[in-house]
Image (cartoon, rainbow, N blue to C red; front, side, top):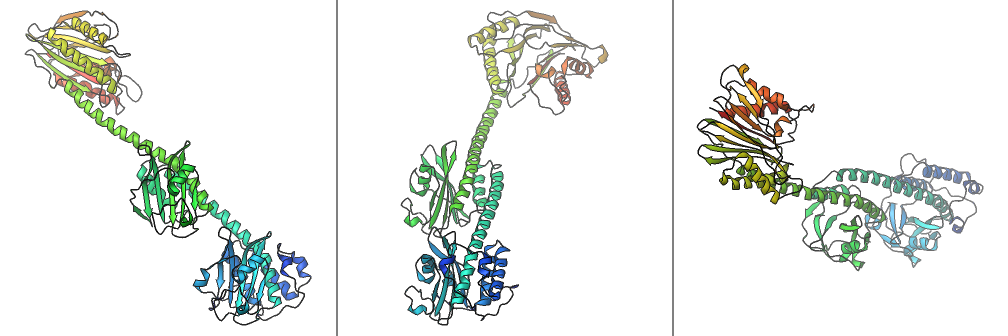
Length: 625
Protein backbone atom coordinates (compact mmCIF):
# COMPACT_ATOMS: atom_id res chain seq x y z
CA UNK A 1 0.00 0.00 0.00
CA UNK A 2 1.47 3.37 -0.89
CA UNK A 3 0.38 6.85 -1.86
CA UNK A 4 2.86 9.70 -1.66
CA UNK A 5 2.20 13.35 -0.92
CA UNK A 6 3.80 16.08 1.16
CA UNK A 7 4.20 15.02 4.79
CA UNK A 8 2.93 17.08 7.69
CA UNK A 9 5.33 19.16 9.76
CA UNK A 10 6.54 18.14 13.19
CA UNK A 11 4.15 19.09 16.01
CA UNK A 12 5.09 22.06 18.16
CA UNK A 13 6.92 21.16 21.35
CA UNK A 14 8.65 17.96 20.10
CA UNK A 15 12.38 18.04 20.79
CA UNK A 16 14.42 17.22 17.65
CA UNK A 17 16.45 14.06 17.28
CA UNK A 18 18.88 13.80 14.37
CA UNK A 19 16.89 12.10 11.61
CA UNK A 20 19.65 9.88 10.21
CA UNK A 21 21.05 8.57 13.51
CA UNK A 22 21.29 4.79 13.43
CA UNK A 23 20.96 2.62 16.51
CA UNK A 24 23.54 -0.10 17.05
CA UNK A 25 22.98 -3.15 19.19
CA UNK A 26 21.36 -6.57 19.26
CA UNK A 27 18.15 -7.00 17.38
CA UNK A 28 15.20 -8.25 19.45
CA UNK A 29 12.61 -10.11 17.33
CA UNK A 30 8.93 -9.10 17.21
CA UNK A 31 7.77 -12.32 18.86
CA UNK A 32 9.39 -11.16 22.07
CA UNK A 33 7.12 -8.12 22.39
CA UNK A 34 3.77 -9.50 21.15
CA UNK A 35 2.37 -9.97 24.62
CA UNK A 36 2.82 -6.30 25.56
CA UNK A 37 5.36 -3.71 26.60
CA UNK A 38 8.55 -5.04 28.17
CA UNK A 39 9.53 -3.20 31.38
CA UNK A 40 11.58 -0.14 30.53
CA UNK A 41 14.35 -1.17 32.96
CA UNK A 42 14.95 -4.42 31.03
CA UNK A 43 14.98 -2.64 27.70
CA UNK A 44 17.28 0.12 28.93
CA UNK A 45 20.03 -2.37 29.76
CA UNK A 46 20.44 -3.20 26.08
CA UNK A 47 19.97 0.25 24.51
CA UNK A 48 22.26 3.11 23.74
CA UNK A 49 21.72 6.46 25.55
CA UNK A 50 20.03 7.96 22.47
CA UNK A 51 17.57 5.06 22.34
CA UNK A 52 16.83 5.43 26.04
CA UNK A 53 16.19 9.13 25.52
CA UNK A 54 13.72 8.31 22.75
CA UNK A 55 11.86 5.81 24.91
CA UNK A 56 11.68 8.28 27.76
CA UNK A 57 10.20 10.87 25.43
CA UNK A 58 7.80 8.27 24.06
CA UNK A 59 6.67 7.31 27.56
CA UNK A 60 6.14 10.97 28.41
CA UNK A 61 4.10 11.49 25.22
CA UNK A 62 1.94 8.45 25.91
CA UNK A 63 1.39 9.08 29.60
CA UNK A 64 0.46 12.76 29.49
CA UNK A 65 -2.69 12.57 27.36
CA UNK A 66 -5.85 10.49 27.09
CA UNK A 67 -6.98 12.10 23.87
CA UNK A 68 -6.52 9.61 21.02
CA UNK A 69 -5.85 12.16 18.29
CA UNK A 70 -3.27 14.02 20.39
CA UNK A 71 -1.64 10.72 21.26
CA UNK A 72 -1.23 9.67 17.62
CA UNK A 73 0.08 13.11 16.63
CA UNK A 74 2.78 12.97 19.31
CA UNK A 75 3.88 9.45 18.35
CA UNK A 76 4.07 10.41 14.68
CA UNK A 77 6.28 13.40 15.49
CA UNK A 78 8.59 11.36 17.74
CA UNK A 79 9.00 8.62 15.12
CA UNK A 80 9.69 11.20 12.40
CA UNK A 81 12.54 12.58 14.50
CA UNK A 82 14.43 9.27 14.26
CA UNK A 83 13.06 7.81 11.01
CA UNK A 84 12.93 10.18 8.08
CA UNK A 85 9.64 8.89 6.65
CA UNK A 86 7.42 10.61 4.12
CA UNK A 87 4.36 8.41 4.48
CA UNK A 88 3.05 7.37 7.91
CA UNK A 89 -0.22 5.89 9.12
CA UNK A 90 -1.79 4.38 12.20
CA UNK A 91 -4.59 1.97 11.33
CA UNK A 92 -7.02 0.61 13.95
CA UNK A 93 -9.02 -2.59 13.71
CA UNK A 94 -12.81 -2.62 13.60
CA UNK A 95 -13.77 -5.81 15.44
CA UNK A 96 -17.20 -6.02 13.83
CA UNK A 97 -16.05 -5.75 10.23
CA UNK A 98 -12.55 -7.20 10.79
CA UNK A 99 -11.13 -4.31 8.75
CA UNK A 100 -8.27 -1.90 9.31
CA UNK A 101 -9.09 1.78 8.95
CA UNK A 102 -6.74 4.78 9.06
CA UNK A 103 -7.25 6.81 12.22
CA UNK A 104 -4.17 8.99 11.64
CA UNK A 105 -2.03 9.57 8.55
CA UNK A 106 0.47 11.90 6.98
CA UNK A 107 1.52 11.71 3.37
CA UNK A 108 -1.54 9.79 2.18
CA UNK A 109 -4.21 11.07 -0.16
CA UNK A 110 -7.87 11.26 0.90
CA UNK A 111 -8.64 8.28 -1.36
CA UNK A 112 -6.19 6.09 0.52
CA UNK A 113 -7.43 7.39 3.87
CA UNK A 114 -10.95 6.17 3.09
CA UNK A 115 -9.77 2.63 2.35
CA UNK A 116 -10.82 -0.34 4.48
CA UNK A 117 -8.24 -3.16 4.50
CA UNK A 118 -9.27 -6.68 5.42
CA UNK A 119 -7.07 -8.73 7.73
CA UNK A 120 -4.52 -10.60 5.57
CA UNK A 121 -4.78 -8.16 2.65
CA UNK A 122 -1.79 -6.04 1.77
CA UNK A 123 1.32 -5.71 3.88
CA UNK A 124 -0.53 -4.09 6.83
CA UNK A 125 -3.17 -6.82 6.70
CA UNK A 126 -0.43 -9.46 6.75
CA UNK A 127 1.25 -7.79 9.72
CA UNK A 128 -2.06 -7.95 11.62
CA UNK A 129 -2.76 -11.54 10.52
CA UNK A 130 0.71 -12.90 11.31
CA UNK A 131 0.99 -10.72 14.45
CA UNK A 132 4.54 -9.70 13.57
CA UNK A 133 6.26 -6.79 11.89
CA UNK A 134 6.75 -6.81 8.11
CA UNK A 135 9.84 -5.09 6.64
CA UNK A 136 9.68 -5.10 2.84
CA UNK A 137 12.73 -3.79 0.99
CA UNK A 138 11.02 -3.90 -2.44
CA UNK A 139 7.22 -3.87 -2.40
CA UNK A 140 7.16 -4.61 -6.15
CA UNK A 141 8.36 -8.14 -5.39
CA UNK A 142 5.84 -8.78 -2.60
CA UNK A 143 2.69 -10.58 -3.70
CA UNK A 144 0.67 -9.10 -0.82
CA UNK A 145 1.41 -5.49 -1.67
CA UNK A 146 -1.55 -3.32 -2.69
CA UNK A 147 -0.16 -0.98 -5.32
CA UNK A 148 -1.73 2.43 -4.97
CA UNK A 149 1.33 4.58 -5.74
CA UNK A 150 4.04 3.44 -8.15
CA UNK A 151 6.78 5.48 -6.47
CA UNK A 152 6.63 3.64 -3.14
CA UNK A 153 9.35 1.00 -2.98
CA UNK A 154 9.75 -0.02 0.67
CA UNK A 155 7.40 -0.43 3.63
CA UNK A 156 7.56 -1.22 7.33
CA UNK A 157 4.38 -2.36 9.13
CA UNK A 158 4.26 -3.23 12.84
CA UNK A 159 1.16 -4.64 14.60
CA UNK A 160 -0.27 -3.03 17.73
CA UNK A 161 -0.91 -5.85 20.21
CA UNK A 162 -2.57 -5.49 23.60
CA UNK A 163 -3.26 -8.48 25.87
CA UNK A 164 -2.47 -10.83 22.99
CA UNK A 165 -5.03 -9.10 20.75
CA UNK A 166 -4.24 -7.16 17.58
CA UNK A 167 -5.86 -3.72 17.72
CA UNK A 168 -4.12 -2.03 14.78
CA UNK A 169 -0.96 -1.47 12.74
CA UNK A 170 1.69 1.28 12.49
CA UNK A 171 2.76 1.61 8.86
CA UNK A 172 5.53 3.72 7.29
CA UNK A 173 6.52 3.79 3.61
CA UNK A 174 9.38 5.18 1.53
CA UNK A 175 10.07 5.98 -2.11
CA UNK A 176 13.53 4.39 -1.76
CA UNK A 177 14.22 0.68 -1.93
CA UNK A 178 15.58 -0.96 1.25
CA UNK A 179 15.15 2.34 3.09
CA UNK A 180 14.15 0.86 6.43
CA UNK A 181 16.72 -0.95 8.59
CA UNK A 182 16.50 -3.50 11.34
CA UNK A 183 17.13 -0.65 13.76
CA UNK A 184 14.06 1.13 12.37
CA UNK A 185 12.12 -2.07 12.73
CA UNK A 186 13.17 -2.57 16.32
CA UNK A 187 12.45 1.06 17.18
CA UNK A 188 8.94 0.87 15.70
CA UNK A 189 8.29 -2.43 17.50
CA UNK A 190 9.22 -0.83 20.83
CA UNK A 191 6.98 2.10 19.96
CA UNK A 192 4.10 -0.21 19.04
CA UNK A 193 4.46 -2.31 22.20
CA UNK A 194 3.88 0.76 24.35
CA UNK A 195 1.49 2.60 22.09
CA UNK A 196 -1.09 -0.22 22.05
CA UNK A 197 -1.80 0.12 25.77
CA UNK A 198 -2.00 3.91 25.46
CA UNK A 199 -4.47 3.62 22.58
CA UNK A 200 -6.67 1.23 24.57
CA UNK A 201 -6.59 3.61 27.55
CA UNK A 202 -7.48 6.55 25.32
CA UNK A 203 -10.31 4.55 23.73
CA UNK A 204 -11.62 3.55 27.15
CA UNK A 205 -11.45 7.14 28.37
CA UNK A 206 -13.24 8.36 25.25
CA UNK A 207 -15.89 5.68 25.59
CA UNK A 208 -16.47 6.40 29.29
CA UNK A 209 -16.54 10.16 28.64
CA UNK A 210 -18.99 9.67 25.79
CA UNK A 211 -21.18 7.42 27.92
CA UNK A 212 -21.16 9.93 30.77
CA UNK A 213 -22.05 12.71 28.36
CA UNK A 214 -24.76 10.56 26.81
CA UNK A 215 -26.28 9.75 30.19
CA UNK A 216 -26.27 13.43 31.10
CA UNK A 217 -28.00 14.31 27.83
CA UNK A 218 -30.49 11.45 28.27
CA UNK A 219 -31.35 12.73 31.73
CA UNK A 220 -31.97 16.20 30.30
CA UNK A 221 -34.02 14.74 27.46
CA UNK A 222 -36.10 12.64 29.88
CA UNK A 223 -36.89 15.67 32.00
CA UNK A 224 -37.86 17.66 28.94
CA UNK A 225 -40.07 15.08 27.23
CA UNK A 226 -41.80 14.13 30.48
CA UNK A 227 -43.23 17.67 30.63
CA UNK A 228 -44.73 17.59 27.11
CA UNK A 229 -48.35 16.42 27.14
CA UNK A 230 -49.29 17.02 23.50
CA UNK A 231 -48.52 13.81 21.57
CA UNK A 232 -47.57 15.45 18.26
CA UNK A 233 -45.34 18.01 19.99
CA UNK A 234 -43.75 15.21 22.04
CA UNK A 235 -42.85 13.05 19.03
CA UNK A 236 -41.47 16.01 17.09
CA UNK A 237 -39.36 17.09 20.06
CA UNK A 238 -37.99 13.56 20.51
CA UNK A 239 -36.73 13.62 16.93
CA UNK A 240 -34.98 16.93 17.62
CA UNK A 241 -33.34 16.08 20.95
CA UNK A 242 -32.31 12.56 19.87
CA UNK A 243 -29.92 14.17 17.40
CA UNK A 244 -27.82 15.23 20.39
CA UNK A 245 -26.82 11.62 21.09
CA UNK A 246 -27.30 9.78 17.76
CA UNK A 247 -26.59 11.50 14.44
CA UNK A 248 -29.22 9.71 12.33
CA UNK A 249 -30.43 10.75 8.90
CA UNK A 250 -33.92 9.23 8.90
CA UNK A 251 -36.18 8.91 11.92
CA UNK A 252 -39.64 7.43 12.51
CA UNK A 253 -41.91 6.70 15.44
CA UNK A 254 -44.72 4.23 14.84
CA UNK A 255 -47.51 3.59 17.35
CA UNK A 256 -49.68 0.51 17.66
CA UNK A 257 -53.28 0.95 16.55
CA UNK A 258 -55.64 -1.51 18.24
CA UNK A 259 -58.31 -0.88 15.64
CA UNK A 260 -56.20 -1.70 12.58
CA UNK A 261 -53.79 -4.07 14.38
CA UNK A 262 -50.90 -2.29 12.65
CA UNK A 263 -48.11 0.08 13.59
CA UNK A 264 -49.06 3.48 12.18
CA UNK A 265 -46.51 6.19 11.37
CA UNK A 266 -47.10 9.06 13.81
CA UNK A 267 -43.94 11.05 13.09
CA UNK A 268 -41.20 10.72 10.44
CA UNK A 269 -38.34 12.92 9.29
CA UNK A 270 -35.70 12.69 6.56
CA UNK A 271 -32.55 14.80 6.78
CA UNK A 272 -34.20 17.09 9.31
CA UNK A 273 -37.40 17.66 7.32
CA UNK A 274 -40.71 16.19 8.43
CA UNK A 275 -42.28 13.76 5.95
CA UNK A 276 -45.62 11.96 5.80
CA UNK A 277 -45.62 8.19 5.58
CA UNK A 278 -48.93 6.45 5.02
CA UNK A 279 -47.71 2.83 4.99
CA UNK A 280 -48.68 0.85 8.09
CA UNK A 281 -46.51 -1.99 9.39
CA UNK A 282 -48.03 -5.27 10.64
CA UNK A 283 -46.50 -7.16 13.56
CA UNK A 284 -43.46 -9.19 12.49
CA UNK A 285 -43.11 -7.45 9.10
CA UNK A 286 -39.75 -5.92 8.23
CA UNK A 287 -37.14 -4.73 10.73
CA UNK A 288 -39.71 -2.57 12.55
CA UNK A 289 -42.25 -5.38 12.86
CA UNK A 290 -39.53 -7.81 13.92
CA UNK A 291 -38.37 -5.51 16.73
CA UNK A 292 -41.96 -5.32 17.96
CA UNK A 293 -42.60 -9.05 17.66
CA UNK A 294 -39.37 -10.10 19.40
CA UNK A 295 -39.65 -7.20 21.87
CA UNK A 296 -35.92 -6.66 21.36
CA UNK A 297 -33.86 -4.01 19.51
CA UNK A 298 -32.91 -4.94 15.95
CA UNK A 299 -29.59 -3.60 14.61
CA UNK A 300 -29.00 -4.10 10.87
CA UNK A 301 -25.42 -3.05 9.92
CA UNK A 302 -26.23 -3.56 6.23
CA UNK A 303 -29.93 -3.75 5.41
CA UNK A 304 -29.15 -5.29 2.01
CA UNK A 305 -27.97 -8.40 3.82
CA UNK A 306 -30.77 -8.50 6.38
CA UNK A 307 -33.57 -10.95 5.49
CA UNK A 308 -36.14 -8.92 7.44
CA UNK A 309 -35.53 -5.65 5.61
CA UNK A 310 -38.28 -4.26 3.39
CA UNK A 311 -36.87 -1.76 0.88
CA UNK A 312 -38.62 1.57 1.39
CA UNK A 313 -35.77 4.10 1.25
CA UNK A 314 -33.35 3.14 -1.49
CA UNK A 315 -30.48 5.07 0.09
CA UNK A 316 -30.78 3.32 3.48
CA UNK A 317 -27.82 1.10 4.36
CA UNK A 318 -28.01 0.66 8.14
CA UNK A 319 -31.04 0.66 10.45
CA UNK A 320 -31.78 0.47 14.16
CA UNK A 321 -35.26 -0.28 15.50
CA UNK A 322 -36.14 -0.36 19.22
CA UNK A 323 -39.59 -1.35 20.58
CA UNK A 324 -41.49 0.97 22.91
CA UNK A 325 -42.80 -1.15 25.78
CA UNK A 326 -45.14 -0.02 28.57
CA UNK A 327 -46.29 -2.39 31.31
CA UNK A 328 -45.39 -5.40 29.19
CA UNK A 329 -47.21 -4.20 26.07
CA UNK A 330 -45.52 -3.02 22.88
CA UNK A 331 -47.07 0.37 22.16
CA UNK A 332 -44.79 1.38 19.29
CA UNK A 333 -41.35 1.31 17.67
CA UNK A 334 -38.69 4.00 17.26
CA UNK A 335 -36.66 3.55 14.08
CA UNK A 336 -33.41 5.18 12.86
CA UNK A 337 -31.81 4.87 9.40
CA UNK A 338 -28.53 5.98 7.84
CA UNK A 339 -26.98 5.89 4.38
CA UNK A 340 -23.67 4.47 5.68
CA UNK A 341 -23.06 0.77 6.18
CA UNK A 342 -22.22 -0.21 9.79
CA UNK A 343 -23.15 3.26 11.02
CA UNK A 344 -25.15 2.28 14.09
CA UNK A 345 -23.35 0.43 16.87
CA UNK A 346 -24.07 -1.12 20.26
CA UNK A 347 -23.62 2.23 22.00
CA UNK A 348 -26.36 3.70 19.80
CA UNK A 349 -28.54 0.70 20.59
CA UNK A 350 -28.07 1.07 24.35
CA UNK A 351 -28.72 4.80 24.14
CA UNK A 352 -31.92 4.34 22.15
CA UNK A 353 -33.13 1.53 24.42
CA UNK A 354 -32.58 3.74 27.48
CA UNK A 355 -34.48 6.61 25.89
CA UNK A 356 -37.26 4.26 24.70
CA UNK A 357 -38.18 3.35 28.28
CA UNK A 358 -38.83 6.98 29.23
CA UNK A 359 -40.42 7.76 25.87
CA UNK A 360 -42.93 4.94 26.34
CA UNK A 361 -44.12 6.47 29.61
CA UNK A 362 -44.29 9.95 28.06
CA UNK A 363 -46.30 8.65 25.08
CA UNK A 364 -48.80 6.91 27.36
CA UNK A 365 -49.12 10.05 29.48
CA UNK A 366 -49.59 12.21 26.38
CA UNK A 367 -52.24 9.84 25.03
CA UNK A 368 -54.02 9.81 28.38
CA UNK A 369 -53.89 13.60 28.54
CA UNK A 370 -55.23 13.78 25.00
CA UNK A 371 -58.14 11.48 25.86
CA UNK A 372 -58.86 13.44 29.03
CA UNK A 373 -58.69 16.71 27.12
CA UNK A 374 -61.06 15.39 24.44
CA UNK A 375 -63.39 14.07 27.13
CA UNK A 376 -63.31 17.39 28.95
CA UNK A 377 -64.13 19.23 25.74
CA UNK A 378 -67.00 16.84 25.09
CA UNK A 379 -68.26 17.28 28.65
CA UNK A 380 -67.99 21.04 28.33
CA UNK A 381 -70.10 20.89 25.19
CA UNK A 382 -72.61 18.62 26.93
CA UNK A 383 -72.70 20.83 30.01
CA UNK A 384 -73.17 23.90 27.91
CA UNK A 385 -76.09 22.22 26.18
CA UNK A 386 -77.46 21.04 29.53
CA UNK A 387 -77.17 24.58 30.91
CA UNK A 388 -79.06 25.87 27.91
CA UNK A 389 -81.79 23.28 28.48
CA UNK A 390 -81.94 24.05 32.20
CA UNK A 391 -82.28 27.78 31.61
CA UNK A 392 -85.11 27.09 29.18
CA UNK A 393 -86.88 25.07 31.88
CA UNK A 394 -86.86 28.11 34.15
CA UNK A 395 -89.47 30.81 33.58
CA UNK A 396 -88.25 33.45 31.17
CA UNK A 397 -90.18 36.20 32.98
CA UNK A 398 -92.02 36.17 36.31
CA UNK A 399 -95.76 36.91 36.29
CA UNK A 400 -96.91 40.42 37.16
CA UNK A 401 -100.15 40.36 39.19
CA UNK A 402 -102.10 43.57 39.64
CA UNK A 403 -101.33 43.92 43.34
CA UNK A 404 -97.82 42.41 43.53
CA UNK A 405 -94.48 42.44 41.80
CA UNK A 406 -92.38 39.28 41.49
CA UNK A 407 -88.65 39.00 40.69
CA UNK A 408 -86.35 35.97 40.58
CA UNK A 409 -82.75 35.07 39.76
CA UNK A 410 -80.72 31.84 39.71
CA UNK A 411 -76.90 31.53 39.80
CA UNK A 412 -75.45 28.04 39.37
CA UNK A 413 -72.35 27.14 41.39
CA UNK A 414 -71.08 25.24 38.33
CA UNK A 415 -72.06 25.17 34.68
CA UNK A 416 -75.40 23.71 35.69
CA UNK A 417 -77.03 23.38 39.09
CA UNK A 418 -79.72 21.71 41.18
CA UNK A 419 -81.88 24.69 42.14
CA UNK A 420 -85.24 25.03 40.48
CA UNK A 421 -88.05 27.56 40.63
CA UNK A 422 -91.25 27.98 38.68
CA UNK A 423 -94.49 30.02 38.47
CA UNK A 424 -97.79 28.29 37.78
CA UNK A 425 -100.93 30.12 36.68
CA UNK A 426 -103.87 28.87 38.73
CA UNK A 427 -106.32 31.33 37.16
CA UNK A 428 -108.68 33.76 38.87
CA UNK A 429 -105.73 35.95 39.92
CA UNK A 430 -103.93 33.11 41.65
CA UNK A 431 -100.26 32.33 41.03
CA UNK A 432 -98.35 29.36 42.48
CA UNK A 433 -94.64 29.87 43.28
CA UNK A 434 -92.30 26.87 43.68
CA UNK A 435 -88.67 27.13 44.86
CA UNK A 436 -86.70 23.87 45.15
CA UNK A 437 -83.17 22.65 45.82
CA UNK A 438 -82.12 19.17 44.64
CA UNK A 439 -79.55 17.21 46.64
CA UNK A 440 -76.10 17.07 45.04
CA UNK A 441 -74.62 19.28 42.38
CA UNK A 442 -73.80 19.59 38.69
CA UNK A 443 -75.27 17.22 36.08
CA UNK A 444 -77.02 14.65 38.36
CA UNK A 445 -78.71 17.42 40.34
CA UNK A 446 -79.68 19.27 37.18
CA UNK A 447 -81.25 16.13 35.68
CA UNK A 448 -83.21 15.45 38.85
CA UNK A 449 -84.28 19.10 38.93
CA UNK A 450 -85.57 18.72 35.37
CA UNK A 451 -87.57 15.67 36.49
CA UNK A 452 -89.05 17.62 39.41
CA UNK A 453 -89.89 20.54 37.16
CA UNK A 454 -91.63 18.27 34.68
CA UNK A 455 -93.75 16.58 37.34
CA UNK A 456 -94.58 19.97 38.84
CA UNK A 457 -95.84 21.25 35.50
CA UNK A 458 -97.89 18.09 34.95
CA UNK A 459 -99.64 18.61 38.31
CA UNK A 460 -100.29 22.31 37.70
CA UNK A 461 -103.59 21.70 35.94
CA UNK A 462 -105.01 20.28 39.17
CA UNK A 463 -104.49 23.68 40.91
CA UNK A 464 -103.72 22.04 44.23
CA UNK A 465 -103.08 23.94 47.41
CA UNK A 466 -99.40 24.17 48.52
CA UNK A 467 -99.59 21.28 51.01
CA UNK A 468 -101.47 18.98 48.63
CA UNK A 469 -99.16 19.91 45.74
CA UNK A 470 -96.11 18.91 47.79
CA UNK A 471 -97.78 15.65 48.83
CA UNK A 472 -98.66 14.82 45.21
CA UNK A 473 -95.18 15.68 44.03
CA UNK A 474 -93.68 13.48 46.77
CA UNK A 475 -95.82 10.52 45.68
CA UNK A 476 -94.75 10.98 42.06
CA UNK A 477 -91.09 11.01 43.07
CA UNK A 478 -91.62 7.88 45.17
CA UNK A 479 -92.72 6.10 41.99
CA UNK A 480 -89.46 7.24 40.34
CA UNK A 481 -87.29 6.85 43.42
CA UNK A 482 -83.54 7.25 43.01
CA UNK A 483 -81.09 6.35 45.73
CA UNK A 484 -79.71 9.33 47.67
CA UNK A 485 -81.76 11.78 45.60
CA UNK A 486 -84.32 14.11 47.10
CA UNK A 487 -85.47 17.70 46.77
CA UNK A 488 -86.43 20.38 49.29
CA UNK A 489 -89.16 22.74 48.16
CA UNK A 490 -91.25 25.71 49.20
CA UNK A 491 -94.69 25.96 47.65
CA UNK A 492 -96.77 29.15 47.86
CA UNK A 493 -99.99 30.33 46.25
CA UNK A 494 -100.59 34.09 45.92
CA UNK A 495 -104.20 35.22 45.70
CA UNK A 496 -104.05 38.63 44.08
CA UNK A 497 -107.69 39.47 44.75
CA UNK A 498 -107.52 38.80 48.49
CA UNK A 499 -103.80 39.61 48.76
CA UNK A 500 -103.21 36.47 50.79
CA UNK A 501 -100.34 34.01 50.65
CA UNK A 502 -100.66 30.31 51.37
CA UNK A 503 -97.34 28.47 52.11
CA UNK A 504 -96.18 24.88 52.71
CA UNK A 505 -92.57 23.78 53.22
CA UNK A 506 -90.90 20.46 52.32
CA UNK A 507 -87.56 20.81 54.08
CA UNK A 508 -86.53 24.02 52.37
CA UNK A 509 -84.99 27.14 53.92
CA UNK A 510 -87.70 29.06 55.73
CA UNK A 511 -88.72 32.23 53.87
CA UNK A 512 -88.57 35.75 55.31
CA UNK A 513 -91.52 38.13 55.69
CA UNK A 514 -90.65 41.86 55.59
CA UNK A 515 -93.15 44.55 56.52
CA UNK A 516 -93.19 48.27 55.62
CA UNK A 517 -90.87 48.23 52.62
CA UNK A 518 -92.12 51.55 51.34
CA UNK A 519 -89.88 54.60 51.32
CA UNK A 520 -90.56 55.24 54.98
CA UNK A 521 -87.99 55.05 57.72
CA UNK A 522 -86.25 51.63 57.52
CA UNK A 523 -86.12 51.64 61.30
CA UNK A 524 -89.87 50.85 61.29
CA UNK A 525 -89.25 47.86 59.02
CA UNK A 526 -89.73 44.38 60.55
CA UNK A 527 -88.06 41.21 59.25
CA UNK A 528 -89.54 37.89 60.39
CA UNK A 529 -88.93 34.24 59.53
CA UNK A 530 -91.98 32.23 58.40
CA UNK A 531 -91.58 29.10 60.50
CA UNK A 532 -92.98 26.50 58.11
CA UNK A 533 -91.41 23.00 58.14
CA UNK A 534 -91.81 19.58 56.51
CA UNK A 535 -90.03 16.49 55.11
CA UNK A 536 -88.01 16.76 51.85
CA UNK A 537 -89.70 15.29 48.79
CA UNK A 538 -88.71 11.83 47.58
CA UNK A 539 -87.62 10.37 50.93
CA UNK A 540 -90.79 9.09 52.65
CA UNK A 541 -94.03 7.83 51.12
CA UNK A 542 -97.43 9.30 52.00
CA UNK A 543 -95.96 12.40 53.62
CA UNK A 544 -98.32 15.25 54.56
CA UNK A 545 -97.45 18.94 54.63
CA UNK A 546 -98.85 21.69 56.86
CA UNK A 547 -100.12 24.87 55.21
CA UNK A 548 -99.90 28.46 56.50
CA UNK A 549 -102.11 31.27 55.23
CA UNK A 550 -101.63 34.91 56.08
CA UNK A 551 -102.87 38.25 54.84
CA UNK A 552 -100.60 40.98 53.48
CA UNK A 553 -100.67 44.73 53.04
CA UNK A 554 -99.08 46.97 50.44
CA UNK A 555 -95.36 47.31 51.21
CA UNK A 556 -95.08 43.77 52.61
CA UNK A 557 -92.48 41.54 50.99
CA UNK A 558 -91.87 37.77 51.08
CA UNK A 559 -88.33 36.60 50.26
CA UNK A 560 -87.74 32.98 49.21
CA UNK A 561 -84.13 31.77 48.85
CA UNK A 562 -82.07 28.58 48.61
CA UNK A 563 -79.51 27.51 51.20
CA UNK A 564 -76.74 28.70 48.85
CA UNK A 565 -77.48 32.22 50.13
CA UNK A 566 -77.18 31.78 53.89
CA UNK A 567 -74.53 28.99 53.64
CA UNK A 568 -72.17 31.01 51.43
CA UNK A 569 -68.66 31.18 52.92
CA UNK A 570 -65.84 33.70 52.69
CA UNK A 571 -62.07 33.03 52.75
CA UNK A 572 -62.17 32.73 56.57
CA UNK A 573 -64.89 30.05 56.27
CA UNK A 574 -67.50 32.33 57.87
CA UNK A 575 -71.07 31.81 56.69
CA UNK A 576 -73.19 34.62 55.30
CA UNK A 577 -76.04 33.59 57.61
CA UNK A 578 -79.51 34.93 58.28
CA UNK A 579 -78.31 37.95 60.26
CA UNK A 580 -76.50 39.45 57.28
CA UNK A 581 -79.51 38.67 55.09
CA UNK A 582 -81.82 40.42 57.55
CA UNK A 583 -79.46 43.41 57.58
CA UNK A 584 -79.61 43.69 53.78
CA UNK A 585 -83.42 43.57 53.87
CA UNK A 586 -83.56 46.05 56.76
CA UNK A 587 -81.29 48.69 55.18
CA UNK A 588 -82.66 48.87 51.64
CA UNK A 589 -84.07 52.30 50.74
CA UNK A 590 -87.33 52.15 48.77
CA UNK A 591 -86.88 48.47 47.76
CA UNK A 592 -88.63 46.80 44.87
CA UNK A 593 -88.79 43.08 44.18
CA UNK A 594 -86.09 43.34 41.52
CA UNK A 595 -83.78 45.60 43.55
CA UNK A 596 -84.10 43.27 46.54
CA UNK A 597 -83.01 40.25 44.48
CA UNK A 598 -79.97 42.14 43.20
CA UNK A 599 -79.11 43.54 46.65
CA UNK A 600 -79.10 40.06 48.20
CA UNK A 601 -76.93 38.50 45.47
CA UNK A 602 -74.53 41.48 45.46
CA UNK A 603 -74.12 41.25 49.23
CA UNK A 604 -73.35 37.52 49.01
CA UNK A 605 -70.82 38.07 46.21
CA UNK A 606 -69.01 40.79 48.14
CA UNK A 607 -69.02 38.63 51.25
CA UNK A 608 -67.38 35.74 49.41
CA UNK A 609 -64.75 38.12 47.99
CA UNK A 610 -63.70 35.98 45.05
CA UNK A 611 -63.88 32.57 46.71
CA UNK A 612 -65.54 29.76 44.78
CA UNK A 613 -69.32 29.42 45.09
CA UNK A 614 -69.88 25.89 46.35
CA UNK A 615 -73.67 25.93 46.07
CA UNK A 616 -76.33 27.26 43.72
CA UNK A 617 -77.90 30.59 44.66
CA UNK A 618 -81.60 31.30 44.01
CA UNK A 619 -83.69 34.24 45.19
CA UNK A 620 -87.42 34.82 44.52
CA UNK A 621 -89.09 37.95 45.92
CA UNK A 622 -92.83 38.82 46.00
CA UNK A 623 -93.64 42.41 47.05
CA UNK A 624 -97.18 43.56 47.62
CA UNK A 625 -98.05 46.88 45.95
